[in-house]
Image (cartoon, rainbow, N blue to C red; front, side, top):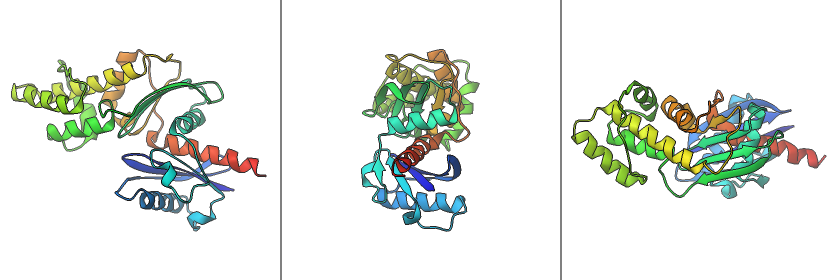
Length: 263
């Protein structure tokens, strides 16, 4: 039986193909103006990578999640990203009790029980500060080629700048002023990463941090954010080999559960 989990967020679309609780293939691609087309393309790409010469319609069950989950016409069921992320993280690291997920446009903190069920969560989806979008804006302001380059630069800093604004627009102005004042780019980048960590830590402060914490989402690939977040919260984070697919993986696992109910 073949199932798929499709996670279409604000910035990227992800699909994971599962067969008997084994990941057969996955794909990640930017979300364009047409979320339905993005969902179709990323799912076809995942099927190709899995070596499956079948159409989307041949999948036995599909669960969609993410901002655009209601728009995925080929999905059999929609499930919120909080539940999907918890299930996917538990599958990757069964001992985890706590998840931080930072994506393109939101950040989430999730507590889970030993079975991977959500027991508590907090979410920031109203402000770009503390998200991948914030880092993208700052990379453009500082003329850094990509967000990926920012993490290593942040770790080179000995004197991170203090970025006090919590609004992306005001923080952008603050960074421009600091740069004009002669601050080094690496110190500005370190300050930006500290600002992200501070924002996420504040969002998660009402939750209980537990052992084997896991860091997911596209921003989990940024070693600077990881380091400053660990320092701020006081826990070490485990990062999956591909942290961007955790929501889609959870959706695929839930698709298997739903399919099993029918047999």
